[in-house]
Image (cartoon, rainbow, N blue to C red; front, side):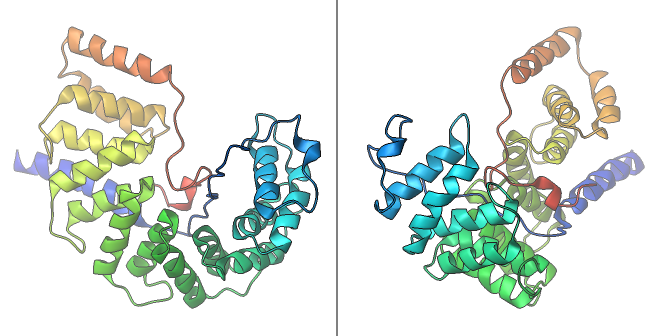
Length: 319
């Protein structure tokens, strides 16, 4: 019995251990939410906004063009340039993002860095984070992990959740600074509290293995569930395992079946064997009930994990 339990726990340890091997940072597509009665701008009023309008109006027009049901990034560039020319930080950031991603303009990392830097100099947190990403990868600027760390730290202190995540990763891996597990935990917590799914998943791993914090299976389950609810397949896999073995939560084969199924639906094929094993512990009525819940899941579209609407979870190395 001890040997069997050791194999189960070791397997979970391996799964959770792999979650924090971060190859490069997130960049965030997070701009200030436009406010005011004139947003969104209707298509009827678009031609009435003059080129010399206030930068806020130009920015709102660009946001409409970018995020309407029929986006037009090419047309969004001109009003963004107008607003950025008057040092409107959200417009500088968004224009930098377009150059980084090649939306409406050719990819130009040097231009992206220039606009990010202009917004970062005004303390605009998303730009500070993304400038850190360019220094981290050496895109448009010389690769410099110290400057990347400083940019992440600035964005984190200004409240950007993704910058907080990247700062935590820097402390954990020693990128541009000394390894500091206590600081890593602190900033993973800050990012996780803002709903950054990857930070939640990594906190689960830290609490499971007692890295920088005491071992705490209840905290492991808490953060793994939050990440799983945001659609991270490996977090769903981990939470299912905790449910199956009663680690941090009451043992529940029904919940384990549900979350293994969600992990598998999300693309984690390692859940297949676990799902088959757990299904043997369910009655027909329990399995039918669980499958009804899963059918309801399928009828709702999955929200993207937090950390920016365009967070690329492949930036975290998957098992």
